[in-house]
Image 1 (cartoon, rainbow, N blue to C red):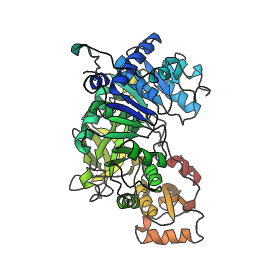
Image 2 (tube, rainbow, N blue to C red):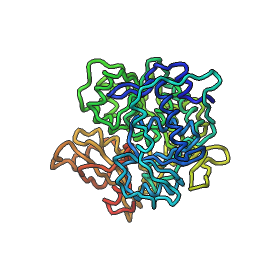
Image 3 (cartoon, one colour):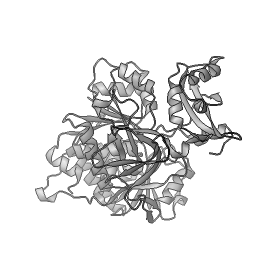
Image 4 (tube, rainbow, N blue to C red):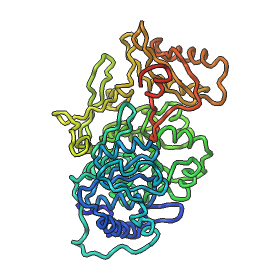
Length: 493
């Protein structure tokens, strides 16, 4: 297939590709920057199949590098800047990285050459990408048949899962996975010629990285933010003409705490990464913020099911129906119709990488067992209940933490909640809860919460203990670190 950036440069050379507060880079300019970066990568010995680790935050340099590695046929291993040095070293070893690029903020970290005996550790600036992106030049003139091509079967990247339930695994993502994911998303959300997608999620996660590829395939602009800030997001919606933004619930919470501009072009907030409470969705609707919930995984190249915009109000709590080309089914394990969510389709990773080997992740029928629990209603809408490993079985009854948390977040004194299991000699397990509050908690809050839950939940679902904390531990994509919370209550991580 024709390289996506080169094609867009040929047909839309002056279309903005990356928009920052300092200015815009057109597709023509981006194509040239990518071409120059390919030359620099070749001088460093990066070639087809080379595994390149990158430790940096969102930047135009990173966008250029992502597309240059695709054009070269090299494999990107994006590394989370929030990880500790031992965690980064593990991912470098697991992905068999041979070239590691770091930015100025990470150059002093104690990752070192010991991270991988074969790895060469370089500063990102050694690629001179910052020099390249500071030069606004026209796209190269090519004959129609001379556009570079990419192989859809090539590995685009090795992306490590968030590791909320164990050690992260490196999911292989192909160019084909990105292509089908982008097509499926467009068929659901629609595509407008003036669309601009705000990237404020970290691009080292699939939720952020996939935006770069969707934009290139669609020929729309990415509005690039280095990090999330509610004031900056609202300002960008007006200044940059943002129409779509991807957020996690904690981001949306913070965004709604700020005053919204009177006018903006926003047509969709794609909300994923964690469960959203009905109260949060109601607040967004009251503020005129169009939210559509989505369910996705790293192994499925982001979205699996997404609520259509027309159903956003009528199907609260649902993640919608599977996107075009993706199949969903529930491996039922109980009378309530709930069970493990299974996925099949062209967006699924070919497997997990373990250094130089790959372990397929689908069964003989092509189904990926997600480890998540959910239900599909009679109309085909998916409702995600919880991670299978987070399920609490109390006296033979299933307790889904996300359900209890959603109820608790509806209490006017609660900001956030995390429900986990604690061992119990009578019931096997009982639910317990850590939560955050608006300011200092009232003296009667715990008693009030028990009564509040008693009116809304079956007795076996009501937490046996409530513990108020200053902050709940979350990953950079907003997922609760339940293992840490379990330790607070004396349980195993």
